Length: 479
Ligand code: SF4
Image 1 (cartoon, rainbow, N blue to C red):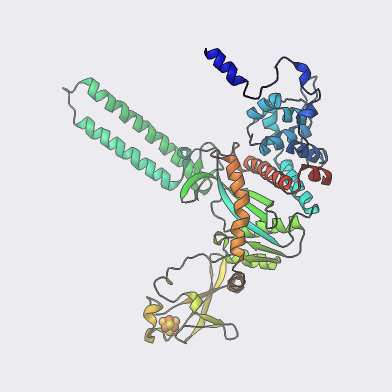
Image 2 (image 1 turned 90 degrees about the vertical axis):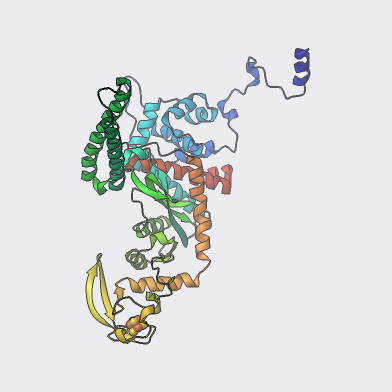
């Protein structure tokens, strides 16, 4: 009865081929790969590269056997990152069973160690390949020559949070272990000779474990204080604790310069610095060199705001747009802020809201910047002093980058739309990259190797983006 019912159902569905009927399969591997498959782009793109000129190291030959061509290895990796297969073991497996990959490698299937070594040993060359693709986009007129958005995002490292120690974390951990030791000692002190051993022994064991943990932490503390930045990461020594979206992660800060026209990533950089304040000039110059332009407009968020960087960008013909950080709480309290004081360059004096002149007093050096100090002698008699200062005199500081910052404020005010453009442009690449990486993290350790991983991610992102824009056929013809 059941069998007859199943038999009846089966006839309603599309039936597959007989597994043992070999003649129904195409005879050429090429027939398995569709004409618009991205794997065809990878093949043509890598075949056109000047592999030795890019500095790829040949895979050493084993005794009696030639090594793998770097082109084959590069194709495997680009295919892997295009399809979110990042691990060398998974790539080894796919090379033996994935028809597209078999087509791409001409049925070569290197072992995972060879695959992993290629990525480890050719970081710089892979980075140059990423750049070669951007150059191709430039030739295809896919890039603007005017506007670039710079942004950074934090990506998790292989290093677990429990294996990262900063001074604050170490202090907290030591305090926790210390209080546990105290608790167990108190419990022990409450026992006596009459207390059965099965009650005291667990406490003694826990106490011993805590004392061992304390010894371990003390040793780690010494190492941490000797480490650069007084921070120790046990698995990946370069990974750093940093804030990301209100929470803490141990990872890397990935900087990108994204072209506003088609959201292609022009330049990228992996750093273990948790803040973006020192990245503006470096990323802007890198994008400018890639575009090969004389003048460039750059948009970034307030995390990049630094007078010195803004001035340096001005000097390098890079026009910046970024909002000021909201550091002063005085405005909220109804107090005067520095913006309420007008500078008169001819007199080298500030004019305050009460109409008084603040004259130059002295010039000094603060945090590597030359700053001048100004104040008025009339402050003690001023009827607006309660809105201005809690001291006897309101001092106003003028730094050497203030002119550049003032011009920046005027530029941002004149282009209110530009910050909206920033959001639209950067959300696309980082959204895609984060989605590709999912909840996972970088697989490699140390900045150098993590940078290689990010180059492969960026290359895959750009290839996919251009395929979406032009289609496989047009892109292959263009290459
Ligand atoms: S306190 Fe001094 S600087 Fe402030 S408004 Fe009065 S005179 Fe001007």
